[in-house]
Each structure stands twice: as structure tokens, then as C-alpha cells.
Length: 270
Image 1 (cartoon, rainbow, N blue to C red):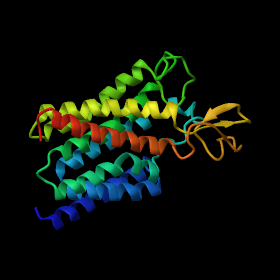
Image 2: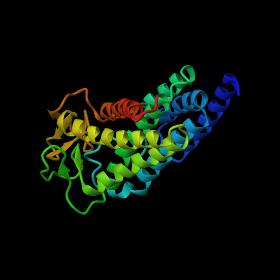
Image 3: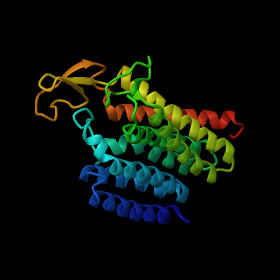
Image 4: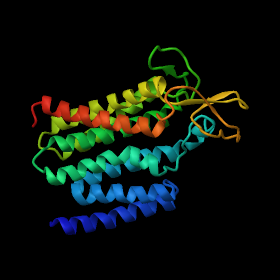
């Protein structure tokens, strides 16, 4: 298939998926626009399996967001984003993957690019699964740094259920990576391990350096800024002001991509 035809088909598929996601409420208007370009680049320059990997991530993570939205509503005053993904969320989660699909088009003989692509998606998928399923945990979450119990919704908090879900989310992309790779074992393990560790890295960044604010009216910590859900201005109490949840997610995606490429090559695949 010629590049121009593949890009044209990619544009049509990306438009259909973005429109459907917007209509069902999975994406905001801005999120749908960015999703179109992410999908277009991935479908058009990567090819069929690259599109499958992206769709597996999108539908599994969006499905969990809708399925367990009732459980997260009680924590809405803490989380800055809801079930509808906006433009920055889409870019943070899928932008690097789209760039790697373009790289693949110009480096088709470098199989580590596929591993990096799947590692990137595995990391954000693992993070999403850990967050969405982790809120169902009966036991209180704990700090990933010192193991102490922390309030539900705290950035970086983990639970046994959430970590298990993260591993499952990474494994799902690992299976896709293995299916379409000339070295299935190396690609599958690289994507799974890097995806899980990328989600762990996300939690460490979230707890240690992500911006956390305080609402003086509700007397609670939150990710919302500049205004809390009650309408009161929030104040930075720890972390780096520029390091919000979207930046943390992108950092996890980058960590997953770099680690997957390294593990793939260390596993004997070039």
C-alpha cells in the first residue's frame, strides 16, 4: 500500500473514532480534535497493528473510566480531570506514541521502535487501569514511597488491587506487542515490564513532585487549580507548579518507551 493511500485511510479511520468518542462523551471537543491527529499519525504512518495497539489502549482505558465513574465521583474534588478526556490528556497519553509511529515510517527496519511504541501505550494504560480499578480497593491506599496509609485520591497512592490492575493493563499491550513483532517474547516482555514500571514511575512522580493544592474552604487537598469544585481559589502546598497530572502522564509514557526499547535490545532483538 502506498504511503498516500495509507495516510488517507488513516485519516478516515481516525475521524470516525474521534467523532464516535466525542458523541459518546469519552472525549471533549478539543480532545476529539487532538485524538484525530494522534490517530491519523498512528494509523497513517504506523499501519494496522499500530492502530490496533492505540485502539486497545483507548477503548480499554475509556471503558474503565465509564464503568467505574460512580466510584470516582466521590473523589471528584481531588481529581482535576473526569471521564471525558480533554486535549492535553489525549496529547499526554498518545502524543509520543503518534510520534513513534511517524519515526517507524522513516525507520521501518528498526523493530525497537515498535517496542517503544507499545511500551509508551502500556505505561499509560497501566496507569489508567491502576487508577480506575484501584478506587474499588476495600483497603486504604498507601504511599508508594513510605508505605503509610494516605487518604483516597492522594496523588501517587497505591493499593494491591491498583498495582495488580496496572500489571494487567501493561500485559494487555504486551500481548499486542508480542503478536505483531518478529521477536514476540522480547517485545511482549519489554512492553509489559516497561508499562508496569512506567506506571510505578508515574506514582512516584505524583507523590513526590506533582503539584498539590489546598482548598481553604473545603479544608482538603486537591489537584484542582486555580479554583476548587466549590469555586474557592486553591493554594499550592507542595510539588512543582508546572508538574500537573498531564505532565506526569507524559513522563510515564516517555519512561515506558525508553525502557521498552532498552529491554527489547537487551533481550537480543535489534
